[in-house]
Length: 395
Ligand SMILES: Cc1ncc(COP(=O)(O)O)c(C=O)c1O
Image (cartoon, rainbow, N blue to C red; front, side):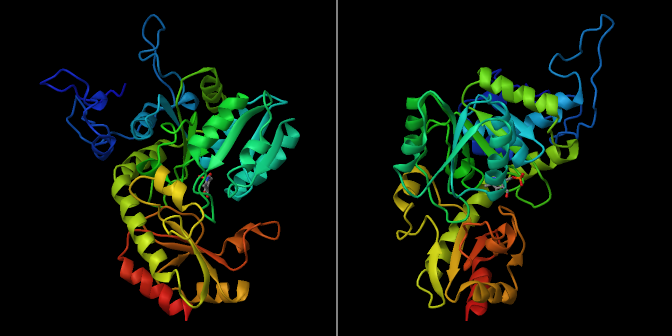
């Protein structure tokens, strides 16, 4: 429990546990944080790396002993994520990669993983190397083919099905409920990288996922000033305890200031994601038939292969990410990038500022990403300014 959480004077209930309050309300209020000793409504930055014991050498607070295991300053962001995801527990990590790695490191040699061919390339590359070195089996499935996942799993041997949806940067949408039943049939856990969808639009645990992963560097924080990751679980079971140990023993934890910035950024998540989603839809619709483009990839468009699943699985929007395939190939795509004046040319996504990226240049010659593809992360600016910028760059 958070030390600053207020008890409702009328009902005696903890405000943060009040089932009548929506996650939207609790997240905006930082879980209704009020410091009982000062009345402050903003939590302090908890910098302590060690926690005191009493005369009898018992910890003053049994939850905290040493900073590598965790820090009370993480709990607000973790509880916010738990409420948003409908999760039993959540853990912050030093990065999205560290969060994903903790899930894989909790497996045992001989276990088999199934992951999509198109996904965050850093994780896909790491999985390939790590699987070999640690004696894990790995097979990649085509996220655009609804039957391919079932072909890739092995009953009794596949222990982890990894999904990313919508997946980077084609925004293919994978049916989480279907993947959960495939994973369940073979005795595997289902983990979903929900960085792009965010809990505002998709709640994978409700669809049957066991673990939800976020690069909190992206939408959760939302201001391009924190590198962090997070996991949330459906069940606080033995596998989750192994993940906890991986974090505590390896120390892949965020700094105190980063955790504090993250809880602050998360307070506006619902507003930011809704604004970015509606702007992205407008941009996608505006440019869908543009003469300079071969395709606009966005799950909110009826022409996108993932549209039907996205409409079922994503609630209140299709996200702030889209990609443009430029007629004329790589050279023309790079020329368009050069002309952008409002979009900032930079990697990453999910911030308040709109970013444009030529993914192939970032990923290099092994990349399956088309060379004509420009990835756009839509921020919260005036959408007409973004449309005008793309119009002038595409001519
Ligand atoms: C979808 C997705 N998952 C995971 C990651 C890795 O997260 P981080 O950069 O916070 O380690 C990224 C980073 O770009 C991402 O886009």
